[in-house]
Image (cartoon, rainbow, N blue to C red; front, side, top):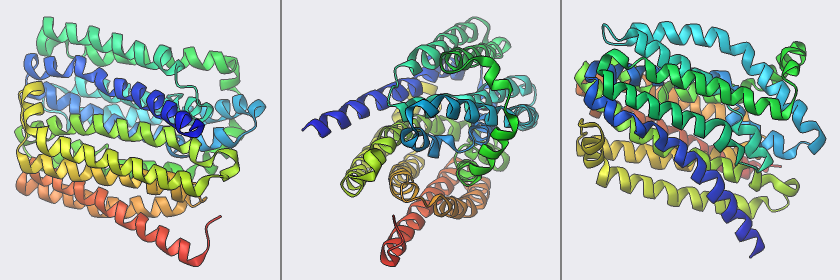
Length: 407
């Protein structure tokens, strides 16, 4: 019973906090959709899409592998690990900010380029989050004070600005978010190490970044068909159809955050005590992610059209909702098969191979189907990508077990 209580506490803490984080944008998005118009709605969606992809690049795969690294590291070595990981991500940050701002500006509807660029910068900065370190420590509470609360305040103030000024003040939302994210990241970093340690030891951090290439590649390639989905649909579809897709994408992001939170909560737990309970805990993780995925599918399929209409006044159709539900289920399951089985077995390259398959399937499919069928086609491409990843990982698990190659 003690183990069940520990697991329950982990799930509640690590799921409730990111679930709240996922709800923060809903402080402003309904007002944005109503007060600022479809062009600003698409511009903010494009900025979030481009920035979300580049945040994965900046994160260097620590969202996938970081909690395991921290959980297995000796306690006295963890602050140095935090410093190495943060410095390594800073190396990637500046070029990512420039690329993101330019790309979002070019993809945004005419006249909304600045809004898109600022949002891309804000979301890219999120790649510096300390969540990977706190998850590995098993102490999620500092996320509230240093990340969630500042972002909630910034988002709320941004919503007020949009209500008062309409499309002319949309830029205030991402600008306030930039200030909140930078302040929160620096505030927590000071608690772990002196800030001057983040400006030295670059050679060590470069070596750390090289060691993270497989995990970083996994995140970046995955982002090609998840985080960049809005940008891909915007390229292939009309502004109106892109607006429909973005409405569904906002709900998808919320579900994705909750799935990732559960995956994070279980990742360190699965390998604790030198993997002494790995088999039992991995099976439990698969069951929990299966239940979460089914709940996400049902919620999307049943409530997606109604929720998007109520929240954003841009309601999706039933088929689009079903495709997003399929993608939600597949993502939940592949989080377990990837993080809790293949990564725990020390097989990050297999996870990378699976997301390459997803990108090969998803990117051209989304682009082609969005051009032909709009939001429905884009959602079908996303579902195809996520399902391909899951099928590939299941096959890899079966083959690895048969070969007896797992640790």
